[in-house]
Image 1 (spheres, helix red, strand yellow):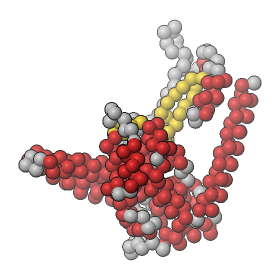
Image 2 (cartoon, rainbow, N blue to C red; image 1 turned 60 degrees about the vertical axis):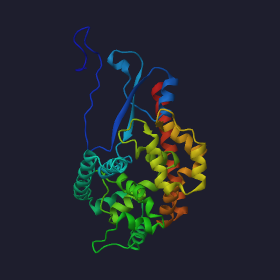
Image 3 (cartoon, rainbow, N blue to C red; image 1 turned 180 degrees about the vertical axis):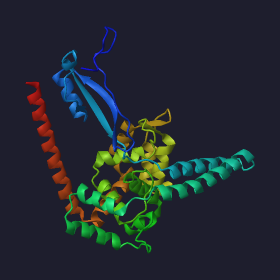
Length: 334
């Protein structure tokens, strides 16, 4: 009532939002529904309806819907951005070795990379106990199950402080070290600072818990977000090829070579997420290494059957929540 305008030109309804960088999700879109079909379509698109009808504010019979997006999506860390920048400058310098400006740019990028590595090491320190509590609650683990996961972690070679490196974890999975950049992003996914945390038991199990619960669609979104840093919904063709270079080093896989020859890359040099998904449907082996890593992590930690049961239980609960929301919506519309 206090928000209601005083004159004819004043708005009768206002929405206020508070920015909070500590939250794990934020609003990315707002829509209005006027009909039952509108409500159904928005709900299918994962929008959340605000409880009050706009008629309470002197407006028509309509509802406000909000779409949330997670802040904990897979992002390039600061060091990765500079590494990409350094690679680009180095490639340009290789073509023009006498260019003093390019030489200085390479030197500056190398200096910045060293500095950011030191800062990330300090900023990325997660509290082990908190991460273990998060993992236990997120996966609804019993004490015995948590103990089993911790025992698996202890089977990996680690330093005197009980920590491992990304390369240690990659070798534990028996993956080629060329997959280390991708695995690094998996650990960044579980870090609140979007930097790679210290790989102790807590941060490692937290990353495994989050990554292993991802379905096919979520996996593709995470892989795409690795290069779509600002969330614009597209990446450059060259970034797509860089990604394939990590998954298939030097394109020595004949299937990848054939796929790239048959692929119709966008002529404007950019690729949307929809096109990215199309490539996965047409050439599933392109992104297979990412899914292989997930399956190996599941197998090493608790086993494939355990994760299958856990995912089935999650799906059952999700359906129950959807049915409850549907009943609540029908009750409100009576």
